Image: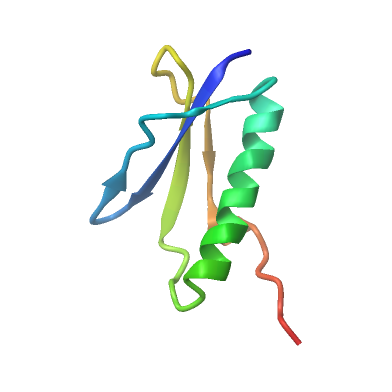
Length: 77
């Protein structure tokens, strides 16, 4: 299985994932990134969406970028 790395990037900071996660493919990596977006919003609800997740593979290529601003926030009632 390929290993994917999920780097959190904002204007001021880059948090590089040095461990990565073995996943079945790019679709699974996309799903993992969406779960990371949700976790970040739960843990830091005051944070805005001025960041993104760059997904890179074992070769260093970055085949996908996930923009949290395109993922709707869930309202807690």
